[in-house]
Amino acid sequence: VGANYFQHLANGFARIPRPAVAPPHVEFFTKSVNAIIGHDADIIYDKRVTRTVDFELELTVVIGKYGKDIAVADAYDWVFGYTIANDMSARELQLGHQQYHRGKSLDGFCPIGPVIATPRETGDPNRLRMRQWLNGELKQDWPAGDMIYKIDKLIAVLSEGMTVEPGEMIICGTVPGVGFEQLPQ
Image (cartoon, rainbow, N blue to C red; front, side, top):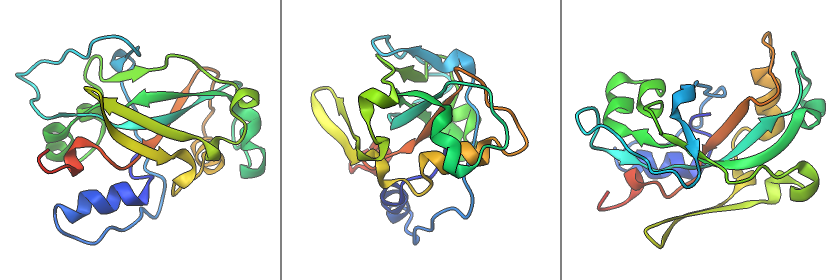
């Protein structure tokens, strides 16, 4: 999911500068399965393709059963569990192509894990807090529940007219603090 935390949008637009506006609809995009790697795997990328690699900490929902046209009120019944992802971005590809897929789908651009926590273990996912460090320095620290479009809405909208399947993951959008927002980047 793109653009799902308003403060992340505001930070990014401040660099342009232009006012941040929340998207009127959920911005879904897909990632290549070859992007997925384990949480301790090295992120190796081809410098002929990109030199602007950025990190993005994101809550990830793992779907637990088949469903279609799921009501918002029932959406949490489809959650198997939660994990985290680092939705890596090649910024010049993302901005140059004016879409998300290629700049976020390079091989190894989606470390996930290390565990999937069940809803019983996490409780209300909107009360979770996510933190990401880069070389020992805290870069992202934000409440997961500060999303523009909450998990139940994401599941409901994604399942409109299409089936969600067990094992599919919804990576819910990045929180503030990515490298693009920093000075220097």
